[in-house]
Image (cartoon, rainbow, N blue to C red):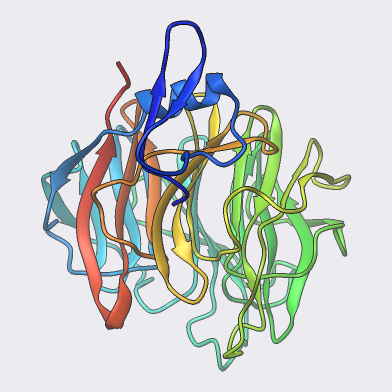
Length: 324
């Protein structure tokens, strides 16, 4: 966090009070927006699912779902009251990423042990409980910490670690048949990065390479593509610091980066209209964490779970209030 206090005057002037200005190199309009989108509501301090991290949170069938949690799958109509949802496939020990496309949710990944990268797989469900195996030979190599998204009517898999850090891009209309759009995108190979569909483009940002290296090499670049093949760098060094395992979303016409880690967890909240110009919002009341989950549901941006310092995990749920 670069600062704590700013006063926006009706004349458009910016007056600094009590420290450095938060928001980096943000423009006045972005600072005003950040001031109106910095109030978080604690939905529940302890959800019915246990403390956890690196699971997927998605909006599906008019509810908020948690998939891939070590304790199973969970469903909520409001983010506060959760029920355990039975599943005929156990995803609790794998590295699948869950993505909603159309009327179905897809589990993309398949690896259960990152020390044994034996196979990749893709599953599909229309109710969150009954799953159909679409393929266990999708074409892309078995991997972990890949980024996935739904974009332009297709499922997308981008990068990840298959023993080395990848920057390949794959897409599929049905989850069964996959096409390699590019073998090596312009962005460097990485894992634990974010992929988001936003403003008619597919975005990739953050992440790390050297998954098990003590000296972490992380990224703060932002890239986008209209077709998954040709990639444009929005910035090689975003206003936010290098980080991996962030929460990420497209909400309220902006890209969002929430928390993450680079030699320590943080609880920073950043947003951008174009991926190039970023503004930092005031520090939220939720604790610094990484491998948290972010989801858009009911017109609100939710943050939940994650790993704090000292090996502590969380099961709280927060939502950003609509601005004044």
